[in-house]
Image (cartoon, rainbow, N blue to C red; front, side, top):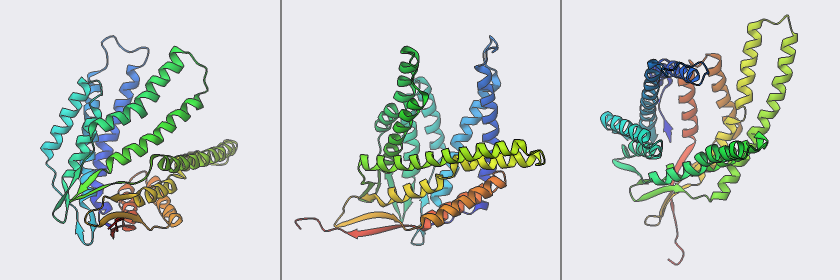
Length: 349
């Protein structure tokens, strides 16, 4: 496979996202904080709050549209690119109707909005004159989100901390939430890969418990590194506070660097390992004795260092370099991803 998107092509979308998404997001959050303050006015939230909310939502879905379109139409396999035929009016209709129904249903319809968006992008793409088709159901996503998001965050939290007024340690609650989040990752990824191409139905062929073990292991490794780097960050901060000769700007820069390092040091490795694992377990059904399967032949350490180098360039340039980071990482990962068609012998034939 190949990915042909250049950083310069993605730059205009990123600039628009930065100014028309991040800035309204900041103003929206500021208004949200004001609404929860004790001295909020009796007349309710400012009208500007709803303006910022509208701009924020509009930019979220606009960025999702252009980002998905750029990514999909720059995918290439055997010299042929994926063709994308997306009607903007249809997309806007999906978003507006989905948001209205989600508000009316107090969020219940939201999984169907996500399903319709995902189906819009998959069904609008084709390769070698053959269209893709997404086969996932909205009710399935609703059940996943209910069991892994609504239950742990609202029901468990409300019952334990409010009704029972339990003194349970917060880390126990966090473990419960993280454990269910692991389940959510697997279920949603499995749901998203339910794609038909010609007569092939492409899905994950991995068992639930095997996937849980793999994802859980990567989260544990990430937590260990976060703990180690938090200790190093604490030691470094103490040294910086006592180092009067060190410039204040230098202290801030080092603290920002350590914050990024602490939060995401293991993330590139976890991404590579999980990507390899799920890719190698993505296969189709058997059609006329043939089965499509994916694979990844990248080197984990080399790719880890490459991704971290791109992340640091993005941090150093305050996000300006991000379009090139995205395109280079995607190109490196996808160029090492391969698709093959295997002859499968069915027992008894």
